[in-house]
Image: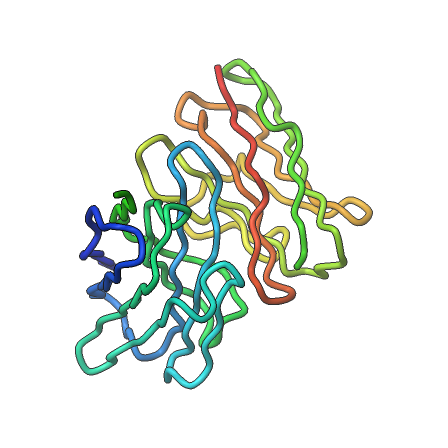
Length: 121
Length: 106
């Protein structure tokens, strides 16, 4: 059974940093691209970052480019999102998402349950 | 960026109704169009990929098609468990983008 378990979400002050993690199991993690997608409560979905199966191809949405860093450790079946210089606009539910493809352009065939990041003073 | 416009933003329907949702991209996305279902408090779930391919385990009452430059998701006979929000998503170009969603209500 595919499982994606996110962690690290919490209340944080503006300007601070946070690292999210996503523990994957039930599939061959090193064979697929992975993504982070966020959702403001009651709002739509926003793709924010992707990383290819090998980690050598990475993409970011403009809203987070230069502030967020996506990393994967295939040996640990774990995906990370380092979030720096957080603003109130980053407040959202963050989903770890598996792609069916090896590279970033693709679709999302399994989603974690999400971890909540609240940025507030 | 490719903007994805979904219509309507919400609709009311009854069990057994045939329901059609539309998604209009701002640019050609070729076949790279997918649909997701999200129920309250739950993560989205892939329903259809590449315009018309039904994801494994998704009931056959769901179907997807292209219509001109846009796309449609059709539920042939709405069931109680289908009341949810539906999102389209393109992967023709980065950044990957979603539509704003269509909420299907009773």
